[in-house]
Structures are given as C-alpha cells and as structure tokens.
Amino acid sequence: MNSSDRLDRIEAILAATAVQQQANTEALTRLEAQTSANSEAIGRLEVQTLANATAIDRLTDRVDRLAQRFDGLVSAIGSHQEALRLISQQNNEWREQMRIIQTEIRDLWQYLNNQLRNRGNGGGQN
Image (tube, rainbow, N blue to C red; front, side, top):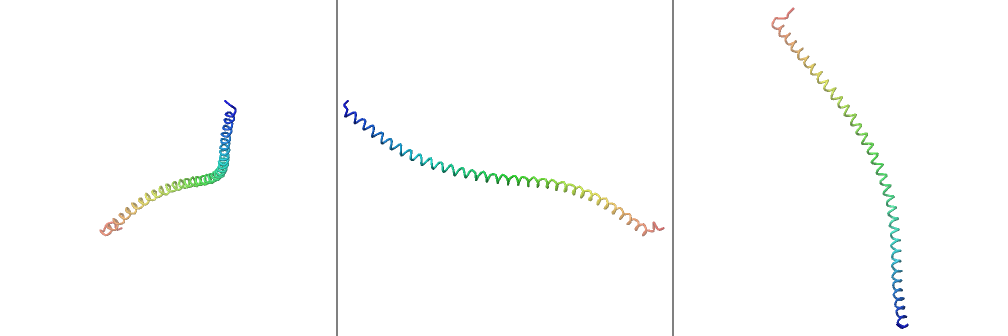
C-alpha cells in the first residue's frame, strides 16, 4: 500500500468523522431543545399538581363538612323518630281512653233510655 492510498483513506475517514460529528452536534441540539421543552412541561405539571392538590384539599374539607351535616341530620332524624314513637304511643293511649269513654257514654245512654222507658210505662215512679 502506498502512502497516497493511505492518505486518501485517512482523508475519507476524517470526512466521515466530520459528517458524523455534524450529525451528532445536530442531534445534541435537538436533545437540548427537547430537554428544555420537557423541563417546561414538568414545571407546568408541577404547578397543575399543586393546584389539583389544593382543589382536592378544598373538596375534602367540603366532604368532611357535608359528612358532619349528614351525621347531624341522622341524629335529628333519630330524635324525631323517637318523638314520633312517643306521639304514636300517646295517640294509641288516647284512642283507648276515647273507646272507654264512648263505651261509658253508650252505657249511660242506654241506662237513661231504660229509665225514661220505665217511667213512661209507669215503672220507677217514686
């Protein structure tokens, strides 16, 4: 192999190396741009994540307040149910007393009717 062939090969390798170095430089530039875009996107995601966490905290607080209200309503319903049970019991007692009174009134009415009939028939006159 002569020196001229050897120089041609070295020049070809150097030319190929220069082309590859240019391609690598362009690829690094694209990677830097993509890395910068990714960093910006990550920053936006961090901001959005913080906003979402704040919104979730507010919603959690609202759910807690609603749960407390619901517990209060359940307690109030329990109290009202007890009151309704007592009212129903009292109503049943009044109905029983009214039935007893109606029976007594009916018995008195029959007694008075019998007394009036007996007087009209000449009985029971003193």
